[in-house]
Length: 295
Image (cartoon, rainbow, N blue to C red; front, side, top):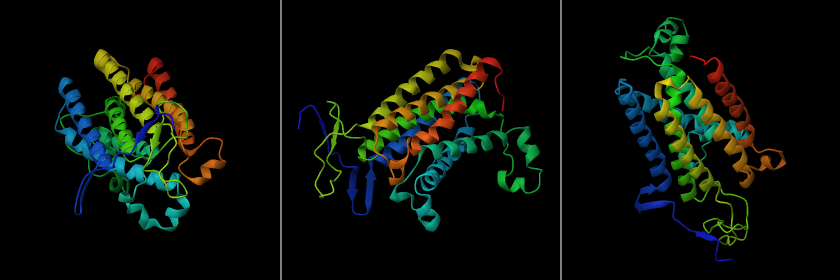
């Protein structure tokens, strides 16, 4: 085996004392949210917004990310199993989160957060039955549009994505296809059908995505800091969708399929789910140059 390959045998656990276990994935997942909270507080402070709203916004983000990502995995990748074993959906600790599901969850939650703090939210709360779904409008010194929040949140999400993909690398999961490239990783914690550690290199697809997300974070942050409030509504969000999910489509060509049925598809599930998000991003980006959408 060429020495140029990188042997990867990192334990997914940082410490394990009895029933207490601290894992790299959980730490990096939490770090993404902490960094995002700090960034949003910084944005709100620069813009004279009510920083107290960040705590509530963080709760919306955490809950929607976990629920959306879990349901996305269960319904997009293994629907037959989870529909016949619905209680297993709650077993988040067993693994199985999908970024596309998290995207849908976050978009929904941020819309609810935004409209509950403006006049539209107050109006919708008066509609029978609908008020049970959306809840009572919350008092705040500020009101927000959906795109106002998303244009700032996606900067944080890009950084969080870099952290989460590093967590996947530490877990030796979501691995790439075999490769002879000198930067290939030999994931020794993965076992062959004979039960032996793998001795061949794979694409470090998690690392590809992590590095891309970090540079996407820097790009979006640069655009925000340069133009701030003069940036047309939705432009940063649209650019985020186009770049992130175009990258996802391309990187998926270096990955192992996650579930068996993908082997019979021309594109895998990650690529199929990315296509409409790229299309939405192109539309929002186009409108930001012609007639920005305000919602």
